[in-house]
Length: 490
Image 1: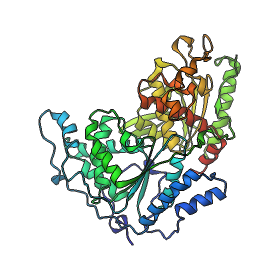
Image 2: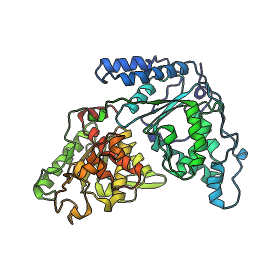
Image 3: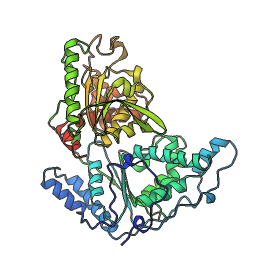
Image 4: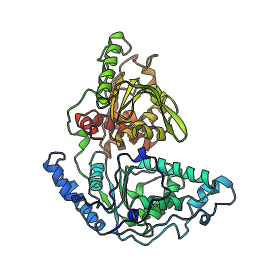
């Protein structure tokens, strides 16, 4: 049985190689893969996973999808010619160009027909094992089918970049969505999204038509998505949400929606802690000579460890990466093993998600030095750090830092922050304060501590609060020896 990718060369979809470094396609391979259940049992037997009855129920659905995919022949999808895609011309110029076409309900963009193979939409709280189940399934996808696995944020960055390339090359008002859908369908019969969420109007309007095309029978793409949100809660209260509802309905028609309600929070299972995060002991000033000496030793130790497979041990100063035609300077690095930044270099300048994704896909490990106390006054720096952590976490990158305090204590009130940003006028007193957050959604719905909910209150937006809380959880996971050992397999 031949897949589309085998029957003709893939055209036009010229994604940067680094973006897909950790992804593999198996076209026509004779390699025999396990079923999801067999793979799960193997990991339980080898002590890589603990047996979870709730997850086993999900494995049944994964096995059904795996069985259907084993005999699935996707439709042939041709990339439309440029001449067939008329530029969008109308009143209000750019506004209509952006919203008018994207919110169109033309029958050629939304199909009510159901695909012969339904995908999976798996949602649940942080830490319940959604990503692990998706990755397990991804490793067992039948080899005759092309597959791609993305962190959703990474996928959107690539879409916007590819859209910009097409409009620059052909016409600023070109309707690029049919081209994007065709290119993706040629590259991936099974498309996996981790942490599917929609918070931006530009993303929502682009996805509204794109996803509706991809998972329709005409394109035949099978979607597997994980999310912290049920489909009906996607883009909740967003601008122009009424235009996004048909996409939600399409997702519900073309996937089996599953809620993973495991009571086990795998973030909280004790793991051996490594010493990747250095901070001074109570009473020791961060800028003191004694502490600065220990910081230097910590940095040198971890740089040498992360760079141990490199024959050339000498770091490169001010190496550069090209990101969307711009030069991104990496102060100290040994590509692709390790990159080193100060916190100010990494988060104090206006870097964007695309910059952090390029870094995460270019280096296996990172050292971030001199992380100060942080407050609402530097909220933009905190947002950038969260975006950086998301990119590194999804790429399974490793992280070592020097900081003014443990991560859980770094976020303080502005009035407590001393002039040098590395010490406090007084230690924060949380006695009694956390009780006011016991009914916070981060606590009641997502299982975070009240102290985390209190610190997340610096953000007004619920999505940002959740992203902040998740970042603290991920930092804890990234400090374990399990995570460090996993990083050696990249």
